[in-house]
Length: 146
Image 1 (tube, rainbow, N blue to C red):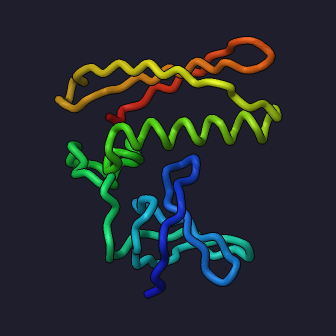
Image 2: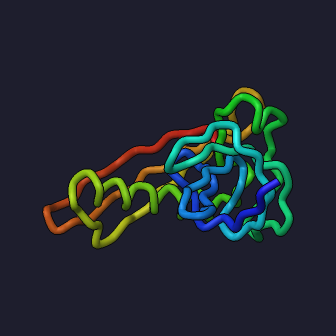
């Protein structure tokens, strides 16, 4: 099995590592972890992989509260500590703003609301306010992650 060091997360919360110039997206892996993975889709410039074993875990890894985590696909970041989830989502937003509109936020203000869902888990809503040179805009992100 190949082993990789996870550098960051992509916009779908997959861990990113590299092997011989190829990008590997590892489902369930977190930044800073050393993991064993198994590829299930190979393309010339990237691979998609399943996490096989965490050799050295992230300090941000937590136990998911939902018994279906990793099975249903609805909560891709439940295994990541809540403040690290916010940071990851902020990075994805900033990257998207730059790649789509060549805009950089001068400041990001974050408001988070949590509530109990019908199944006993937590449901979160994250609202980010971006202050850019062109004025103010906002982006809403609702999810079932904590």
